[in-house]
Structure formats: structure tokens, C-alpha cells
Image 1 (tube, rainbow, N blue to C red):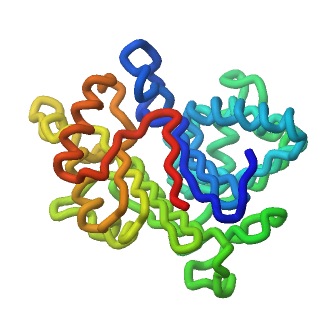
Image 2 (cartoon, rainbow, N blue to C red):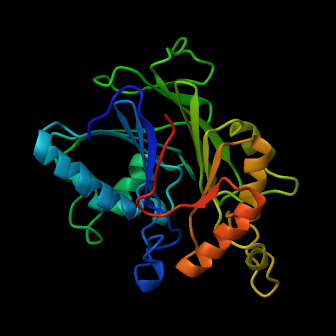
Length: 307
């Protein structure tokens, strides 16, 4: 894909939570699990590797066959639950010797990110081990007190302390900041991608609090686009027969509250429940728009341009 240093966009390749849900009831919004493609200038940043990353990988390979340019991408994991990693073994660029992948994510339950990915690809579960992939990979744990800075597109991204030990960021640089949320089992990273005064916040797999998630509201303040978990309706969340409190996911009302109080430009609801078909999600979207008109439901293929 041809890019320039002013282009900043997000494309949704997987919007479902839990497990893939193909079929006639998910044609409009899609059935793949979480994967987002962020284009920031000449940098390609991929958020999570649910099954949506398979289609993204196929697109990157098709472009590679046309321009013969190496595929260089940074993959950021929010956490390592199965629906955010299950597509990684099938990400075609990882099998190419010319590909360069920078892979970052949290260290959860004292397990390095590389160990988690290695274990997910051990025979007999998968025929190819992580260390047998053809690509060049740099895999690193990152912490909530760090940030990632993208400058020269021919240079690797820099990881440094959020106190800016990398030095002052120039206007042409892309910066990823991190907030660790504890409102999901084992914790989850929320990412803010910032470029030329524009800001994209991705907050999947988070659960709201009474009075709103104050840390997230502050972290997302003024964002052009907030992507927020909205797995449940309030009725589902409060159902006394089968409580969903503490599962680490939000209602659309929780997402709307964050968007309103953080004064974001657009709210995109994601991590759709596998039991919610297209008609159900359309109704959720309608109700959310009554409270926050600049709301839309994420669907596979949706692209939003920030600048």
C-alpha cells in the first residue's frame, strides 16, 4: 500500500470476541476475532492477532507480489488470551524470509510474550514451531511505564521510558503510549497511537466501573477515535441468572460514558459477543447513537481516516 507521512488510519480486520463466528448471521459485521491495522505515515502497526490477521496477511502478501518490497510491521498485543493470538500462526508474512516483524506485548502471569507464542505453536498442536518461521522477528515484553516511538521508517521502533528518555518527539514521529488496565483477567494493555496532533485509543477487553473508568477517561481525553469494548447490553451484564460481572468486558453504555467524558471525536464499539448477530448489533448501534451520536459499530473492512 502506498503511504505518505501524513496518512493516519485504522482498518478493522476482526471485531469479534471469544471465538470466530462465521455464518449468515454475521455477514454485515463479520465473524473474525480481534485484529486492527493502523497506518501511521509509512509505519504499519497491527493491534492483536485474532483470526482477522489472516486476511490482513493475505492482503500484505498480495501487495508484496506486486511491489516486491519487504513486509515490515509492528505487532502489538493487548494481552495473550486465545481470541487475540489464535490467528498468529496463520499470518502469512511471518513465513517469508524477507519480512521483518517487531512484536511487543505485556508479560502476564510471569510468562514472557515469546514463551506464550512459542507454546501456541508447539507440535502436535501446530506443525511449524515459532523458531522455524522464515521471517526476522524481534519479540520483546513492554511495560506500562514505556512507550514506543516510530521515526525513520527504515529504522526499528524505539522502546523507551514514558518519561521521554528517547528525547523530545518530532512532529513527524509516531508515538504509542500504554495504559495497563486491571479490569480484565490477568490485565490488558490499552494503546494510544499519536501522530501530528491526532490520537487513536484502542481499549478492547476492558470492563467499566461505577462512575466511569477514570484512568481510561483521562488516557483517552481528546482522542479523535476511541475503539472500546462493548460486548454486553446492560440487561445481559446484570442478569442474575448468569452474572457477567468481573469477566472483563463492558456494556455499550460503559463505552459511551468514557467517550462522553473524554470528549472524543468518534466512538467505535468492538469485541462483539458471539451470540449477537447482525440484527442485534444494529439495534445496539442505534441505541448507542441516541446517547452519543458519533458512535458506530465496528465491522470487518471499516476504515477510518484520522488525517
